[in-house]
Image 1: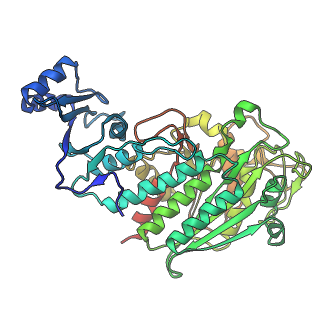
Image 2 (image 1 turned 45 degrees about the vertical axis):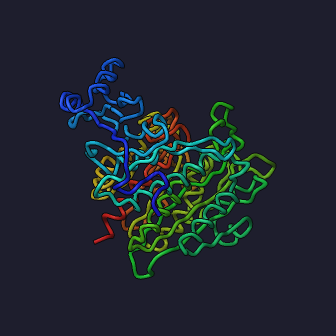
Image 3 (image 1 turned 180 degrees about the horizontal axis):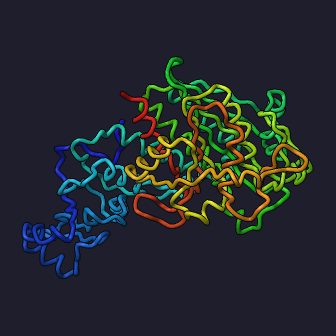
Amino acid sequence: MSHPLIVSPGFPALPIWLVEEAIWPQISAELAPIALAFAQAQDFEAKPGRLCMVPDAAGKLAGVLFGISATDDQSADRFLIGKLPALLPEGIYRFAPAPRNPKLALLAWLLGSYVFDRYRKKQGPTAKIVAPEGVDVEEVSRIAAAVSLGRDMINTPTNDLGPDGIEDAARALAEKHGAKISVMVGQDLLEQNFPMIHAVGRASATPPRLIDIRWGDENAPLVTLVGKGVAFDTGGLNIKPGSSMALMKKDMGGAAAALATADMVMGSKLPVRLRVLIPAVENSISASSFRPGDILQSRKGLTVEIGNTDAEGRLILGDALALADEETPELLIDFATLTGAARVAVGPDLPPFYTDDEQLAADIARIGMAENDPVWRMPLWQPYASWLDSKVADINHISSQAFAGSITAALFLRRFVNNAKAYAHFDIYGWTPSEKPGRPAGGEVQAARLVHTLLKERYTS
C-alpha cells in the first residue's frame, strides 16, 4: 500500500521548480510576470534550501521555487527536498523538472514528513506529492514505514518500551509478515546457555530475553541480523553521570535498526532465509547487578572479565553472535549503539563499520553513499587485540588503553564469530541530534536502508 502522502500521476498539482543557479535564468523566463516579480521582491536566489512560494494573478499559490545544489556539488545534502513537507501548506505538489534521483527525492519527502506524536498529539505535514515517473512507489512507501517503525521505537521512553516492549514490537512485526518468533526469558537464558545476556539484564524488574525471528524459504541463503536491545542503560554499578544517561532510551537503537531492516526485507519478499536475533535487556542497578571484576561465562565458551559494567552491549551481543554463528550464515550483520568512541571519531551522522571481507566492505561503502545512508569503514586492527588481554580470564571486555575504543569493541565482538561466511558490525548512534532535511531530531535507524539494498543486490538476480 502506498504512503498516504503520495498521489498518483495525473492529479492536478502545483509545481515545485527545483532550481539550480545554472538554470535559474531559464526558469525565471518561463514564470508568469507576477510570479517573477514576487520572487524578485522576496530576493529569491537559486541557492540550496532557499524557498519562495509564488502567487498567480488572483493571489493564490501558483507554485514553489526551491533552490537545489549543482550536479557536481559533492557536499550537497541529497535529502534536501525533505525540508519541503514541513514548510508547504496543505495541497498536492509535483516536481518540475524531475529530480536527479527521483527515488531519493520521494523518500526524503516521506521521511521529512515523520512526526513522533505518541505523547503529544500534533498535526504532521499534510502536503502531498505526485510520484515521480519510474519510481517504485510501493517499495519507497515500505521503506519509509520501516524507518518510521524504528524511529518510533527509539523515541519511545523505557517506561513504555522496556525489554518486554521490544518483544511486543518484534511479535507485531513477525505477525505482519507471517514470520516465526520464539523468545527466551529470564532463567531460561541460563538453562539454554546465554549467561552474558542474563547477567547484564538480571538486575532489572523486567527480565532479560532473547528474541529470535525466522522468515523465508529454508533453501534460501541464510542472512542473520543481530540488534543490541538495551532498553535503558544506567551504566550499571559503573553508573553514568546524568548528562550521559539522559538519552539512554536510545540504547536499543541497534534492535530498532535490525527490526526496520527486517521489515524492509520481508516486505520486499527478498529471496533470503532471514533470522533476526535481539538480546533485549535493561542494564539496571540492584543487589543482583553484575560487578566490575566479575568473570562471566559465555555461550562461546570464553570466560570474560568485566572491566566496566557500562560496556554491557558487547556482552549481550557476544552471546547472540555466538548463537548466530553456529548456523554458519552466508552473511551476519550486527547493529549496535556501542561506543562513544565512534562518535568522537566520526560524529553522529557517519557510523563506522567493521569487516574483514573486502568485497563486502566495498559494497557497503558504495551503497551507503548511493542510498544517502552513509557509513565509514574502520579497521579491525589486530595489534590492538592484545589490549583486551586478561590475567584471570580468556578476555577482558574493555581495553586496557584509553584509545581506539570503537575498534577494540569491534575486536571483542569478532572473537564470537568464526563460522559466518561474511560478517559486518555497525557501531551506530541511532539519533539525529539536530534537525536535518528528511531527518527530524530524534531517533534514527542508521544503516538499515543500506543493508536492505545490499541484500537486494546480493540475492536478487
